[in-house]
Image (tube, rainbow, N blue to C red; front, side, top):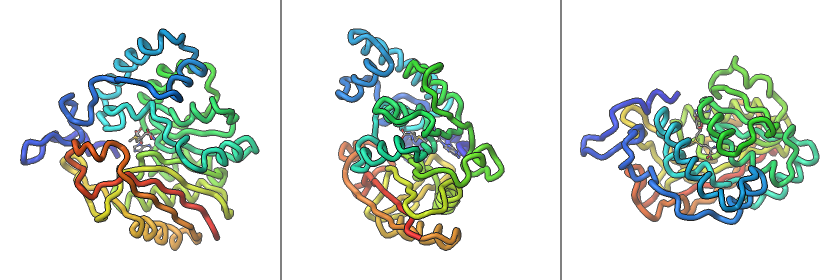
Length: 291
Ligand SMILES: C[S@@+](CC[C@H](N)C(=O)[O-])C[C@H]1O[C@@H](n2cnc3c(N)ncnc32)[C@H](O)[C@@H]1O
């Protein structure tokens, strides 16, 4: 699925494209200026890095990141998204924690370094109630190195391709109550997103109240946008995302309530990335099964 980014790294106007390992791209931040309080709290009190060592440890993360950048230069790696605890910003976060403490189960699909799962565990969720799934072992290994918890994390991370319907994700069929997809669905075109959503439906319990939530790039003018030189991906607004879930519902015999928020987060206002335009928005969504 990621072969599309192993392609020519410049468009016809000589602009760098996704897939470039060139560190001049606007989505590779050369430095990390400051940490938020939740980031500092997690590194000090979950990873047990001494307060005066947090910055040196983060500098070590630069090296980790460069390893990850070398094998797969995704913007989420270049922009340090792997220390953003985006799930914890959800208005539903405290409900999610309560559900996990009551033995509901959550899958973080496309978990990458797994920062959102670490935050959940640090905030009291039982590790046995959380599962991760990721295509690339290098990212998962970088996560253990970053959060210093290879022997203590306790969350099961399954190496799997979401599109492999006979693969290792099958062990979670019909078992999940919640699935988190951060910066994930927007990696695919409409068909890819539909298939990934249908796969998520098969992993969720077949009951009302199960939920998919996450965030990604959207657009006020929904459309295909180029991703690397070889592939297009689809950017939604509220209506097209709802339509996607109508299709998913029709194909899976289920009905979904779709809530979408579009705002100017994720550095969109800086207008640095060639795939952003004036209509690009950060899209946050909660999709709940109602039938
Ligand atoms: C943009 S990153 C987002 C990481 C993380 N969820 C976050 O919010 O920071 C997308 C992740 O999805 C993974 N991925 C891409 N295609 C996948 C697939 N077909 N199956 C499973 N994971 C996949 C990538 O390896 C990458 O780690």
